[in-house]
Length: 221
Image (cartoon, rainbow, N blue to C red; front, side):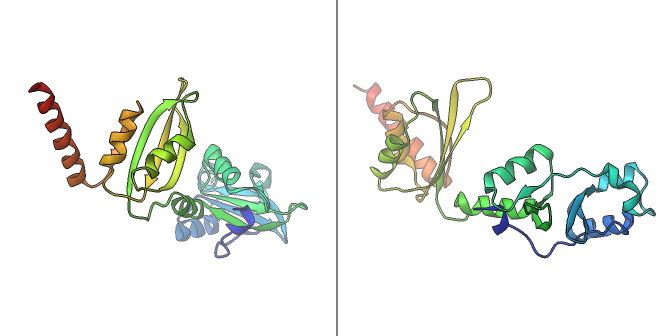
């Protein structure tokens, strides 16, 4: 998904002649901390609520402080991941989208990005989550998929995260089943480390009772 597809048309923009108080009023209405300043079609930069307070701009026009504006932005054809990465690094509640001539096309809000990621991760779909811990060398998406599908389940989303300062990774699986006990048992047989499981409590209790029963039977041998 590209930046141009994520633009929110409902957001206001500021003109250089607007005051800091007008900026704060818009930010409060839309629950954001940043707003783009536009002159005709040209993107001049972002003003923040912190800037208004720090520079006492409430009664002053923004044009008197244009030099203080930063100009973070993305281009229309940049990918969602690039948009999200820049917003995260700069701690932005919105980011402007510009064309090749630096003309303002619109802005993408943090809530836009969050909603798209929720859809991509199938967060609203019923099912359970398994988090595996392994190494890059042992990671095999095809084997993980075979284990899941071998237990009559399907992967709705899969995300890999490097564990800081180690060679290990976490693999988060969202599956289309709530009862993950059979999938978990198979991963355990294949020596995968289960870092966390999120599913219906009753299913977890049944799995733990089954494990306990197997252990007690082993002790009676």
